[in-house]
Image (tube, rainbow, N blue to C red):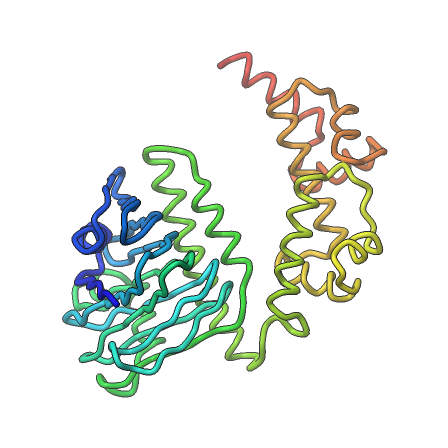
Amino acid sequence: MKTLYIKSTTARKMINDLQEHLGGTTTALNEEYVLTLDNDLAYGTISALTIKKSITYIAFDIEFKKDFKLVNTILKSSPIYFTYCSEGHVEHSFDLSGKTNTLDAYQTAILRSGDTVNNVYHFEKDRVFNFSTIVVSTDDVSLANNDLNSKLNEIFKTESNTDHYVYFGSYNLKISEKIKQLEAISQQGVVRRLLVESTVQTILALEIQQHTDDIEFAKNKFGSLNKDEMEIVKDVSQFITNYPEKQYTLKYLSAKSGLTPSKLQEGFKLLHDRTVTDFIRNVRVETAENLIKTTDLNISEIVYTVGLTSRSYFSKIFKEKYNCSPKQYQDNQNSLAATA
């Protein structure tokens, strides 16, 4: 069993601490830091970035070759850790010898240790770990200069400096989708920085909202669906997104997934805030919009390509989403291309 120590809450120093223990190579661009590992200790990447000088996002996509403990050592104050597991599971304890709790895939946790106790994550060898943590600093400077940090410090404060705050929430696939969006950002420079910062803040907002919902309803937000069933809903959603041209019915999707129609509807409402039918319609409209921008297909061809048969119906739902007709949108794209 090896023990790693992180002694900071800033992205650069966190990555440097990890490289000191694990080796590997680091890259840095626009205040984003990535540690790439391929050695006898670990394989994968650890990435980190700090926004507003007081909130750090660190993501692990890694497989350790030995059992490890990752210790976030006590600083002058106790940061708040918003942790989300996308794949596998992560075990956490307060201090090295403390009782461990397991964070499963798609589950959220909010953790804050007492002033004299460390936060510890436990990793078994030969397992893939895909999880992220948003670290909110609570030192005097961060609280004085950042309203968000100050408010979160009040919300997640403990009764005394020796108490812990620990919350393991219900499952949330929306956060997983938002993390994928973060990883898929391809823009560079200022645009990338703005997109990254806004996405990280959205992830933080979703985790806080999950906590609020769990307290308000005092029950599993998945309702009657378990984690495996929500994973099936996620797969069905991806299938529809990949093949919008297919003629879907609720009966067909129910038979394909093995879930009852009512569970499919419940899952889509939880994951997408849409019914199954509305989700299919939205996927088709968004696919059509992309085809208008990236291909030379005419509107009738696009209607057929996305699985619709009525051009007038397509025009109606397109205008509802984009506030213009498909033809107007296409003409505008052509005008932009001509002046480029």
